[in-house]
Image (tube, rainbow, N blue to C red; front, side, top):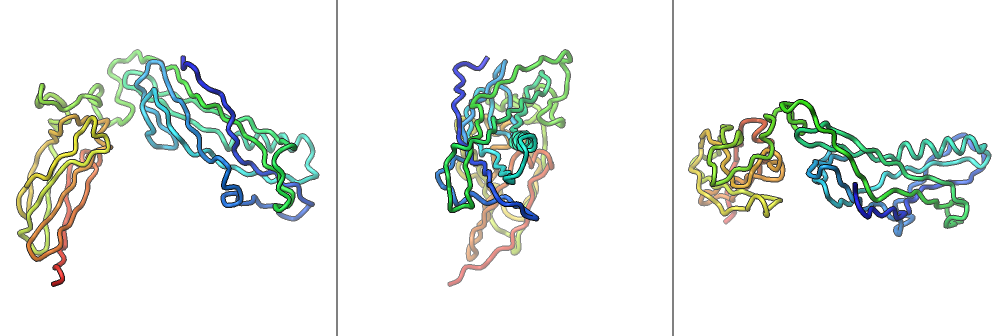
Length: 288
């Protein structure tokens, strides 16, 4: 279980405007009215066992255990002053539903699971009073700071890799290394490299640009050849895996005397999916 999970309350602005009956009532924009209001929160996320990839809002945000700062859902109900208690409670329920945060947990060999957290939403009439905003009250919406998920082991050891069904089961985290060259499916994946330019005859250089330098190192420029350039080759970047390839880029630089150098970057994961890194460079002459 996640230890020492703090359940401190975070004030998230939710607007309750007491207004006279009108034909239409629209939510007010608080983004500039309350610069002190907290719009994000740090969540402590964990799972059992650890090492699960955490997905939120369609994006990978970390691997358990992790602490991640996330923007909080921002929903502003407008409540008429003649609403009954029952109708106000329905507004609270709707606010909680719209403000829910769902986290997906994925780990090879386990079933994908989800955890949804809901805030405590209350109409706090003793809240901060702003007469300049049509007698508006700021009320608190409280989110827990901890998210925990118990992973369920799959009985099928040959289940497809759920992070990406195109990846062979068991190959996602196999790392390219000097100790076992050619031993991973990643190294055996051959992709096409093709570059051309106008005019031709420009020199090509490439290097690794990594956002995870502790695992995959950045490299200096290496000479490839001149345009037009075509080759089929695999990725033998030390430390690279299918899983972390999204965090690594290949930078291609084109250089020719009398012309401005041009640089383009290609995401390694996308290159693997497309089985190709290719581009055309339209060179621009230097101004004397």
